[in-house]
Every structure is written in structure tokens, then in C-alpha cells.
Length: 395
Ligand SMILES: *Cc1c(COP(=O)(O)O)cnc(C)c1O
Image (cartoon, rainbow, N blue to C red; front, side, top):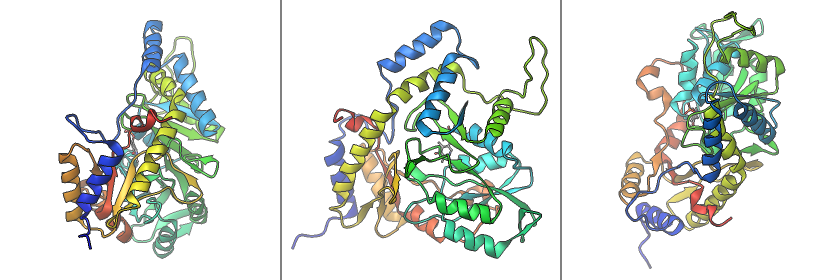
């Protein structure tokens, strides 16, 4: 009988067979794909002179995103973090409120809550879909909150809990339909962090369109990029108007006078970034197709492994497979780190899931639920190289 392979051998064999040998330059986790089309539109934008906060590409990018996501309104923003901040502010999150966020997320999810003067309240994840677990959330809220005058209060801290920020982890849609029920039961407003999930759907509905509003990111490592950038999606016309106003210093339209009617933000996406975004959006379908091909290759290869499993899109959903993800069948931090070191030494720039947000120094005192599943996920998840270029040639 052959000796069973170690997880290190299994991982390196799959990376080698799917991506090819990484000779010389390392293979990035996720890199932007910039070509002639991007060069053309950005050059056009530059020569037009309209590079800043006004211009045709901003409108075109917003219209294109609205068409793709079927959101009624899209507002392009300087980055995803600012978009989350503005979205939370606009739906009425106030200083001193608590906002429910998954502890397994990128730090921006919690920071945007803090930027509102509010306090993140960390909850557990669902072991399959990797997003916030609606069932565990319901149990936690039932035991620790009460509703007064149609608002939810944390019975331990006395603070109002005003919103809920689910996140679609690595592009895999979380159980959003269930979460919408829990949110309505507990009078919570949903702001979806869909920063990682452009091109991910639940049935035919795009992620980010289930809550009061949703947020996308176009940072350099996301599925499409505008350099830095983000967007807010909403089906609420009033809210869209308010967000647009607040994103542009709350300036009232006037030929020459500077009249502002609120303390507001300078968060609009510049036209030059939107020009890049328009070009990328034209190529989004090809990126998504290539990324799905790559995910299929990984999925087939990891199916042969004994110690590692590929994390597939949840049933009933379409993932953009932003970051392909595997899990150790036995969660173990030491093994995880050995795999990361070995893969990186071979030129495959794999990465662990984020350190859980409730363990970061600025959030040590933040309220939290029991977090057993997130702990296990943190010890077992590894992201593997996922750029579209690995399969763009196949389509
Ligand atoms: C990328 C990301 C953001 C923030 O987006 P930026 O554009 O980088 O500010 C927010 N939340 C999650 C989960 C992200 O992955």
C-alpha cells in the first residue's frame, strides 16, 4: 500500500498541475488584468481633461453596473470602505449604536462601523457558505436583545443595535434570504458588504441587492478594478438621492454659491477611475467565465485529496469565485501555516483567511456572540491563486 500523501504534498501537487510550475516570478493571489481596452479608455479620459469628480465615464460606469446587477440605482464611490461608511451613515447608523458584523471578514467591514462612531458587534459564521450564520444570529439576538418602540436594544450594554452587515465571503453568496427574515424579525436594517462578490448571484438576484443597500469594491485585487473604487447599490430612489448628495459635500445646486446643507463627504469616484472601470466592466463576463473554469479545475483536482477540500459555491447560488478557497479537513493552525510557507516558498502566493476581527487590538472590548465556527474556519481556510489570466486563454 502506498503511503498516504501529506497535506503539503497534496496542495503543492494540485497547484503545480492547475497553475503550472511557478518558475522565477511568483504567482499572485489575485492580480488585475489590464489590456488595450483599458489603455484606450483611460487615454481618452485624460485627453478630455475631465479626470476628476465630473465626467461621462462616471455616469457610464454607474449605468453599466446598474444593468449588470439589476440594482435600480448605483452611486460610484472612491473605495469600498468609504462606500460602506457612507451607506451605514445614510441608512441612519448613529454614534453609540451597535452594528452586527461577522467576525470572519476583512477589517473594513468593522472599521466602517467605527467610522460612524458606532460599535461592531461580532457574530459567528456558517461553516458551509462562510458568511454570517442567520440561525446562530437569531439565537444570539433572542437571548441578548429586546425590542422597544420598534428598535432593537442590546440588553447587556443598553445600546441600540441599528444595522446588520452581512458579507459574501471570497465571492460565495451567504444565506441572504434567511438573513432578510431574521433582520425583519429584529428590526435591523441590512447593508450588504458585497465588496468581494461582483458577479455572484442568489438565483437570478445579484448579491448586494437584498438589503436596504449594498456595497461593491473595485480595489486592485478584486474581480474588476478601478485602481481604487467602490459603489453603492440600492433600489430605494430616496436613499440613492441622499447618498449622491452626501457623497458630494451635500452641496446644493447653484451657479456660483457654496451652499451645503449637511456635514458630508467627498467620496465620489473620479472620472479617470471610472474610465478604467468602464473598460473592465466590458470584460467582466470573460473574467467571470475564466474564473469559473479555474475553479472547476481546482475542484476536480482537490476532489482527489484526502486532507484538503475545495470550497464550492453554495447550492442555489452562482459564485464569482473571486478567491478560490480550500479547507483543511482537520482545522489546525500549525498545519495551515506550514502549507502557507511551503506554497509561498514554491512561488504560489497563497493566503490565510483574515485574523478574526474580534481578536484585533481595537476590537478586543467589542460585544460578540459565541464564535466557534469562525474559529474553526480561521484555522482551516486557505486562499489559492485565482487570477482570471490562468484561464482567459481557454475561453
Ligand atoms: C475589499 C473589501 C472591502 C473594502 O474595499 P476597499 O475598496 O478596499 O476599500 C470591504 N469589505 C470586504 C469584505 C472587502 O473584501
